[in-house]
Amino acid sequence: MSRLQDAFEVALLESITMTSLAGVSAGLTQTDSLFNLQQDCTLRFSNQVATSNGTLSGSTFDLTQPMIVDIDLTGITVGTRGQDLVRSPRLQRSHEHNRPRQRATHGRTADCSTRGS
Picture 1 (cartoon, rainbow, N blue to C red):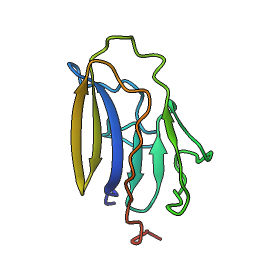
Picture 2 (cartoon, rainbow, N blue to C red):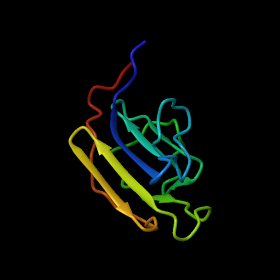
Picture 3 (tube, rainbow, N blue to C red):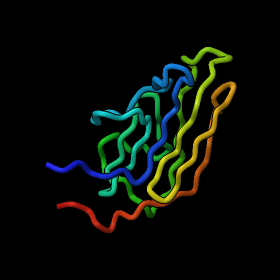
Picture 4 (cartoon, one colour):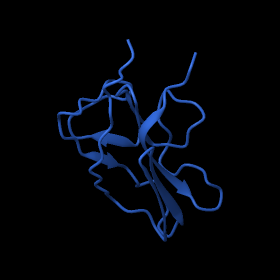
């Protein structure tokens, strides 16, 4: 069985150990992402992520509807050095911060036109 490709994912990692600071996407293995959108529009995220429209992890994401993603960072010690990663086949970005940001907004889209059956 082939593994679906990521269309877009976000990770927040401790900068020395590279371990996740905000959990990992439920239902995925071999990942450090806390938020993952796959090519078939399946959306998966950690239990520290909430969506504005109530989308559940493991469901199909409707690209026609806007969604705000909130990440609960309350368990991260102030002063923790973290690295946020936003990865997409068309976008590669990595920034290191003295402390994680509370909210980030990214206007990216995924091509879910090749949905599996």
